[in-house]
Amino acid sequence: MTARVLVVDDIIANVRLLEAKLAAEYFEVVTAMNGLDALDAVQRTKPDIILLDVMMPGIDGIEVCTRLKANAATQHIPIIMVTALDQPEDRLRGLRAGADDFLTKPVNDISLFCRVKSLVRLKMLTDELRVRAETSGTVGMLVRAEMPDQNREGNVLLVDTRESSVERIQAALAGKHRVTVAADPQKAVDLAGSAVVPFELVIVSLGADSFDGLRLVSQFRSYEATRQTPILVVVDPAEQQQLLRALDMGVNDYLMRPVDRQELLARVNTQVKRWRYTEQLRSSVKASIEMAITDPLTGLYNRRYLETHLSHLMESYVNRGKILSVLAIDADYFKAINDSHGHDAGDTVLRELSARIKQSTRSVDLCCRTGGEEFVLILPGTDLPAAVAIADRMRKLIANKPFTIGPGKMIHVTVSIGVSSLEGVEDTPNRILKRADEALYSAKREGRNRVEVAAA
Image 1 (cartoon, rainbow, N blue to C red):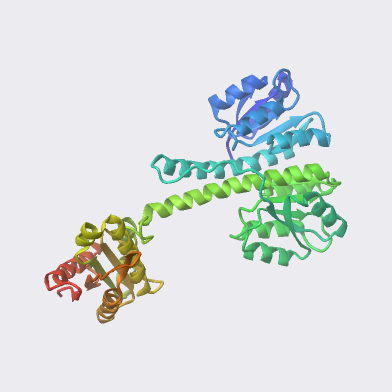
Image 2 (image 1 turned 60 degrees about the horizontal axis):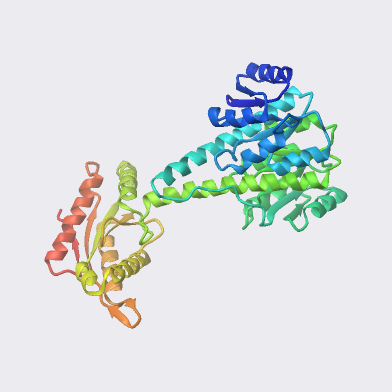
């Protein structure tokens, strides 16, 4: 793994030592000797992670961290505070300022690399999501995610068999986060995988007597439902090797026993906040994808998705000798509806028309809006006679019930439908769609409100 690391310390020997260690592991290292230089270096070099000394003249590390985390352009960059002090109050100050982790001088090599690599992995995931979200944002598709606040309670799963430990953790998080306790590891995995409201953090006691904490961490990381869920482990000082293995497996954070209540709350707050930010980004990316392939008025798939999906579907069906049919659907006299009742009424008709078309379909069928009042329905595994029957049932469903376009205002709407089916290995998406369109035009010429079959 390669990444750009910004090392900030006012003592040149400390800078050179960390620079040498990181360079030996093929990290690109940028350095700064004070707080102001650090803020400037962040803007110039765009680091993937920052190792930030706490005690510096002028602007200290806490102030630098506070400024970076308050800036939307830099708040996602992981910050590891490096300090000669190892008091809970010092860690709390940094965590409240937004620091992601701590290292105590003299820095242990294994802890350094495990922490850096873990946070860099998270940064790379966040960067990928941010790029996709921002790309979509530039074309007006969505609003970028912002770092969420901590006003809403977090949903935390605690896996521990020690009653005294459970009580202390619950007491520390009371009023700030909802804590669900599981003493059995399988129950914990089942809870996390089936929760209606996803857990935003899992806390695992690594030294539990009745289960293997590392195996449980591995299970959480291997299942799709919990793969991205943050994990915080609680360990005894003697469990150093287990901790390092846990960090290597993707654990996000840890606490040493005896657990300080304030530090626990600060670390849980940090993990929940970061999880929510990442989830906002994922939701934004998902929304942008949906917006790219769906019609905003009706919620149906658009022509772009139709062409891609039909191409793949036909290739699969031709190779397997399966059947497939297509309906081309068009609302009759739709321009007259807009002209007589207005475009709002027209939009209402299109939404209701889409709902009635979907009402006549199965879950495997693909319904698309391809133009103003034009729709295409793909019917996998459906032969021509069955497709004609479906089309006629749909036509009657639309024609026999008036459409409400306003208070006390109702109109009758009909559709014309053209039907075509797959015609062997030489057939293509363009040909089958063209045949359905030609049958649709025939239905229009023959008087509308009818179903026509494509000529053989």
